Structure formats: structure tokens, C-alpha cells
Length: 60
Image (tube, rainbow, N blue to C red; front, top):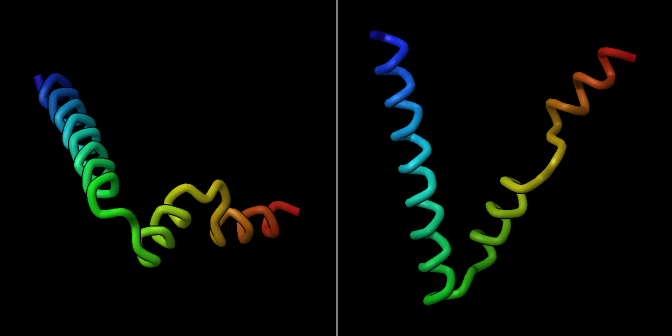
């Protein structure tokens, strides 16, 4: 039964994330973005992070 509860919790988290993304997109459409918003979006959408670079160096 625990796995069922965990699955339900994960599904709920996914729904909450989707709703927050929709709200953020709606706010952006209404208000536009400012410099801080753009920086946060750019950082969130970066493919590689500093941690990835460290891991790559360690594996060489």
C-alpha cells in the first residue's frame, strides 16, 4: 500500500508543478518579464551545471 501512496504523491507533485508553470506563463504574458525573471529562467534551462563540469573532470 505504501507504493500506491508514494505514486499518488508523485502524481500530485507533477500536477502542482504543471499548475505553477501555467501560472508563471500567465503572469509573464500579462506583466512581461524582468531581468531577474530572465536570469532565473536561463539558469533553470541550462543543460550543464558547474557540478556536471566537476564530474566530467573527475572521470577524465
